[in-house]
Image (cartoon, rainbow, N blue to C red; front, top):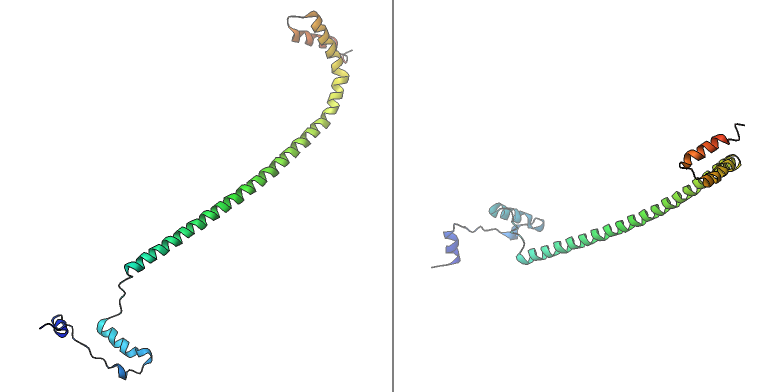
Length: 157
């Protein structure tokens, strides 16, 4: 005959009798310890397929959310860097233009005495030499101008 007791006898599982009415410990600690000694520590056989699916879904949502936040943070940083780079470029361009203007003004101021000297001492003789060169049309005009300047040098007199 097949009964539950025969099944357990065949598998060599013998019933253990515990009297839980005599246990006065908080939360039946003594009884729980006896059960642990008899059958061993409790085991967790893992989550159910539904729980696994839910855990995967939550992990995927968390990953997607994290990726989205990282992407937004990266875009924000790139925009911030681009505006900072543009601002620095504008400042640099402004300083460069100011330096160019100052250099031009300095060169203008430094060139005034040289211009005055050229206009007073060189240009009259050079102008006369160019006019003579145009009238005579020599084969080598550069050599002609050089000879003219040596012959008509007003400082040698």
